[in-house]
Length: 305
Image (cartoon, rainbow, N blue to C red; front, side, top):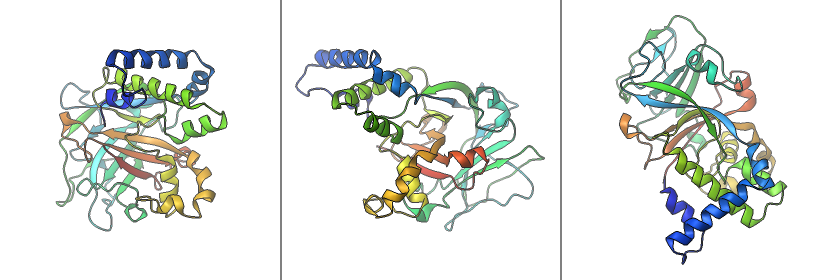
């Protein structure tokens, strides 16, 4: 992800001194926080469940973990794509986070398990890669520790430490651009929110080193993902302008609002995790599918600098 100071500098006059730039940024942030627009955007605030990857100091009896060997039912078939067996990413013991799920979107028990093609790291913009990840929910039952197939990438095992978190939406995300369009935000108001959002990210970096979380708003490295999720999951290629230019785009576009973040997994040097060039791996799900505990139609995206 580009340095936040560099991102913020894009929205002030390039010939301004550093001190003048900072003053302009702070003024824009204060103007935005005092405005009606801040009240509008606050309605898009979402609670998330942040987690950190820890090799030491975590709750040792927890079943939540990244890497290593997963706990699986005895009859579960290891998932694979058309190219290879998928790699185990992480699993979350939902009883560990039941008290942190502010909107009760997840079951109170069982294991939520994520697989991905770590070796090839597909980006997610190609419908042909729909099988390159898998999310599986297991209700509580007997589990056994299962070794991955020999072809799989085995990540170092880390425990997960969970904390409540609050997220604001990315300035270029679907809900923000729709809100701004529907309420006729001026260009100045749009830039004020950008200043506010990037300042918020800078403050967050002082609290958490890696931005891993479940639910909430995504922290986008690049473009909006909700429209892309809708188009790719309906068979449109989005690695270039093909999907955007497709005649079906207009018909499919309203469905972008149906998608929500399920989990984002940041690059994390402490756990030897790297997505592309210091990117983030995202898993998305339709709201109705989440309500019905149907994780069979999730969508994955990888974004990096």
